Image (cartoon, rainbow, N blue to C red):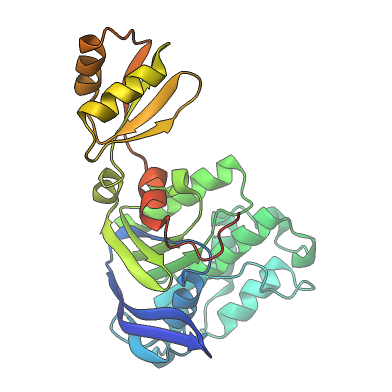
Length: 302
């Protein structure tokens, strides 16, 4: 379990995390989402003692990370896959970590096998691809067989087979009752992996909910196409002005939000407008996320 209470971190005049409160429960995969600069990486650094909070507390299994007697057995973290000496081999890197906790070489070999790195275990990390570096970072996180996993963009650089492996691994670890925190910008993958999501925006928690509940907040859209699309849009807005929005969706089409497909069809029938398409598109994690964070983006492009 990871708990944050009033967690705040400031860097001079810059507030990275502002009085954040959340609880990350064991037995599920929790997705950590937010625009660039929202405070996700800072929060993760605070969790594992790489930074100190300006105010508030963050604990892992009800203890501060700095108070853990054997942190590798409690928390496995992947925050920067490049944070490895390039001249060391994968096996040497893991053995050095293992030596700090009295972990056997057999466990080192086991995580190398688990992450698919056995054949390159004696190669220097400096020659690793991005995906191989990610696998080594995951191996290091798993080394102490921890009860808590904190992973920042673990599938970055992995091929489709590797992405599927990470998804299955994290869901298996959660099924064992472990706490799994996953940060990723890949919404489609997060939707298939996470059970719960916490969303940060400008350093604050803007959502904390089961993923199905969060997605439902994105709302369904009605895709409608007609050779007389402009007249249909005018008719819809005239009859249902409150809560209705229309967005262009390809040639002669709109995505209507705030209205049911049956009502769109009824309006078209009353006005004698021919429809070529009338379908309901269920909201996605990406839809819900973009809707929620539209005003939270700190580094928006023009």
